[in-house]
Length: 222
Image (cartoon, rainbow, N blue to C red; front, side, top):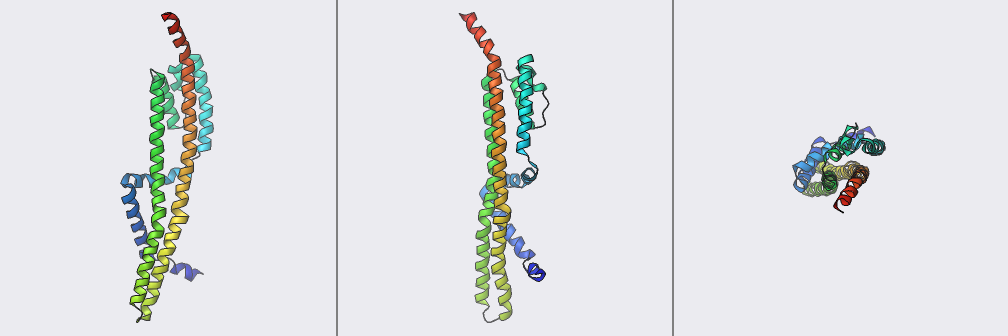
């Protein structure tokens, strides 16, 4: 078993496969998306969106209380662990109009969704390219076999190349790239869901706090 496992590892073949897959992904997505895809590996392992959601809901209760007692301008005094929540509270406190905060929230979440999609699509490109390049390596190995039919010693390496490239392509696509892409997609959906909830809650607070001012203005005009 160990002998078989040792023969399944060919550094040069694996390096050629990884290089070819990386080149395809680079051409399809660009360097920025590829860098973002590998940078997302850390959050893919460490991210806890449910924990962030629960912490955000607890912070929103405090922000709501502060808005009722001291006004919107004091909501940025609430300390939160997540950068988005801190930034949203600061933007809510410093916005002169509700539509300014609404525009900021919409643009911020749209940009974040686009960045998440870029990282996920890069891994999907890797998952798509790996089997194709594995098949290309298989064809090259078969060509080498048929070209060396009169040399039995050359048949083994050519057959190994044909099979190893297919094996590496399947492993890279289905064991590495596709699961990472699915994990990133799931994390993105769950993170954006609670961040949209936060933005909607803050908009509701802002509308509630500004309602008395609008009613007073209407009475003054009347």
